[in-house]
Length: 439
Image (cartoon, rainbow, N blue to C red; front, side, top):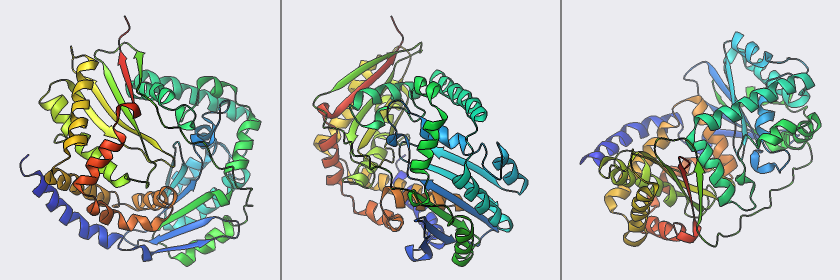
């Protein structure tokens, strides 16, 4: 434990040369924009004869409203259920038969489709993506079947995950007006009552090429990618620019608290603070604060609650990627016989120490080393690079910001971390959620 900083520094030194060789500069990323507004990023990586194509749609649950909550996630499901050339479930099968694979994810802010293929079948995946982006079927019978799948996900998710249930309940209290207040999967009644016309209207509003970003990484040249994009994706018509999400969460004027009753063996605690969006003010200071407080067994909260305090069996911190101001979360699972109040007291004590006394230079260096090592490790695969390039383009406004991440982390001072803790970790800015067995 005493030598953690030295170990991390060695790991950093070992990792950085590889990452710099694999992804050395923003200049290696080539870009072009199709006539329909679709921007494409291309990064050559000839280590293997494979290619990753990732298409980001700038749409997530924050673009929904009561009545159609969860439709972003549902549309992700339907994108695998048939278009003009490839019918229901064929997307996966055709790609797998060609030696490839596919996946997708939906967040509050973005929906992303990921394809991994041998270079030899690259034209196929461009054709398939053009097919479903341009001619999605939304067959009524398939839609109803998929509705059942999503309802099962909804029920199973909350039954199996204490955190998911507590998080959903806390968001509904922490946010008054912003659409981050509802879960990505949506409300159960909305899931049961969407109509095909709702899903189709949403598709037409948000799935235009001018609301998308394509990232290609692998054994390709920009010229090859541009030719395929012009052939299969440029014919997609651009659409009216979707309405901007204008809602801003008003400043919280006092601590909020909630209790969720569930048959748990020990209490669960979730403490959340409102903080700025990704890439905004204090972002890197908050990321280092997240590591210092709750990342790994050397973190302050792990020592105070788990290894030394014996108050919890698990604790961690979470700072999500977000286009709008979001929540910095601290989670703890109580040890048997420990109260939520005891865990909360210990957590707030550690927060207060940082806000009033600050952190040591050793803590700062440890956190910085962890963050940079993790960052470079996240660039190891073609898929990782594609996902990060798209993430930085969307959340930071420019993919080139990816290449200054390590430098930005290096610039953060101990004073800035202390100031961020004092600025955001105030009682009036806090929401506390407790899960416990009902009486």
